[in-house]
Image (tube, rainbow, N blue to C red; front, side):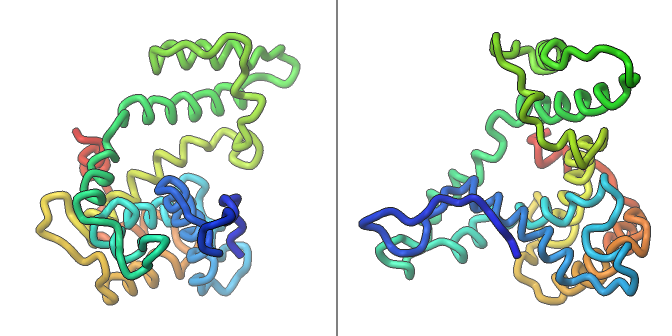
Length: 241
């Protein structure tokens, strides 16, 4: 099951909930984890589905997010709430796609703050005193150039501190892999490759990336699927660099 905290339908609107784009992206992200589990064919439970290296587990979820940033797929998945046969207009979808690069520098620096904070905290000795608010302030000011709001402590609600345990960096690490797979096999930035809805490529992704689970190292799965070792070139392009 995919349990998400989406807004309920409101009076005077259709029975189905109307999701803003950021929540559509969230749904695709979480459904990527669901597909990783459903499509797994590992014989041993310990290595099935999302039981892969922690810094690869977010790759299949972030992979599906890419379809939320393409005009063609946005028009397939959207519909006006009064007439579902009318998808989001192409010009509006185009502007939405272009907004992906808005504030990308600051947002990626924010991810660096999270990852470094996570590792910093988990590197502190057991009996050492910890001032999490001070550490957040130090990292945020030095990396993002934006001081933390006085009187607040983001760390108090940083749920990924438990479970990821110094491996939050895996979100950005996995994004390098997901963007490389998407741009190399489904749709390239130069437009020379456009296989967004190609069932053969999709099946290759399913069998070579999702099905093995943790029975093979992630680097071997990626190398097999890409036909080469992964790199960060497409990741940098996705950030407008």
